[in-house]
Image 1 (spheres, rainbow, N blue to C red):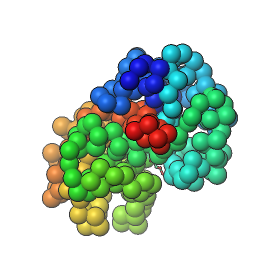
Image 2: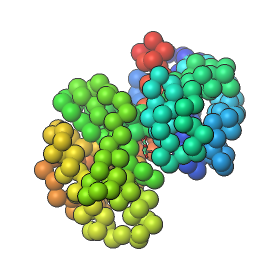
Image 3: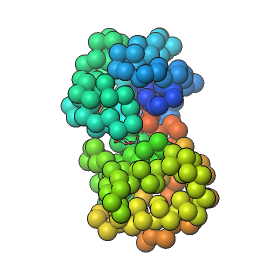
Length: 253
Ligand code: BGC
């Protein structure tokens, strides 16, 4: 594959929009990642402009572009906006970004992108059966991957546990806001992962999100039966997974 063919992965987060070309054979960036602050408010048009600007930093790359969005995405249209500007609801993100950038853009849920990357290149590489990748961040994202195939938009962060959407009790942002000790947070996470075990009986849980670099502090405190491991692509997973998604959706994979 030549440089110009590489897909570009863009991770659209609450504070930063980060992107780089990705070698989909290796699952790694082929150039330094560029970060541009997320416009506030993060309305679709403003975000699309940032994507266009970001792509100009990689003038030699003409491949498809994958973009993560922290919401349900079906056929390129965003159908939920729990933690982002409500202007995303109903937005045809594929069409908007394709028009703004002049590129072949494919939009995917952020946790699904991370899940694809972890299963293809990371902590769940080579694992068969059901793998559940969860991202612990502002909300809780989830990816269900069975024998390497993604079942998109699982939205298990919104699963009700003790009468509350799980992410409102157990997301990393809640740990920070309530200044929870690792022990207290681990109790909430245990309830959450036990509920996932009860419903899905997965082979493996992978835990992503920025806090996964501190996995040693809280994963050993979880009292569950299923194997649970930290993500290995860390904060690259979203962009790498988005690029892989775009590559496959564009018919190149
Ligand atoms: C959203 C998901 C997203 C997750 C992580 C949740 O609030 O509903 O779509 O994957 O946050 O960003």
